[in-house]
Length: 76
Figure 1 (cartoon, helix red, strand yellow):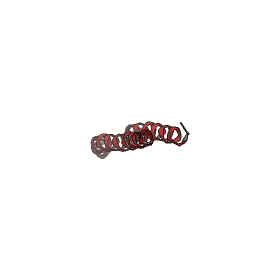
Figure 2 (cartoon, rainbow, N blue to C red):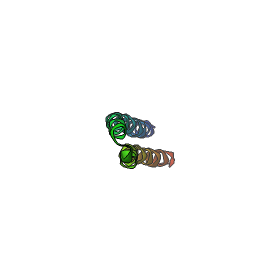
Figure 3 (cartoon, rainbow, N blue to C red):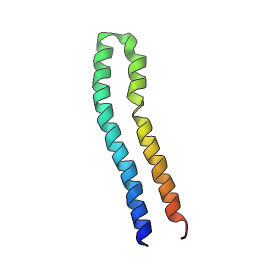
Figure 4 (cartoon, one colour):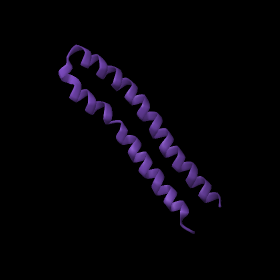
């Protein structure tokens, strides 16, 4: 029973901490991207790609959380 609780805590931490880290990264990248686009509109494509890259961290955290959750559902 305690093992399931620890797995649930681990899954929550995996998703939560990656979400926080991605938000912190996007804050800095987004402000730089807006400045670059304000100077030259041709930088929009590069700025968009660089803004989306930190989201992959959250996707990896979500996949890890789902895998842990599915492992928790299996009987021991």
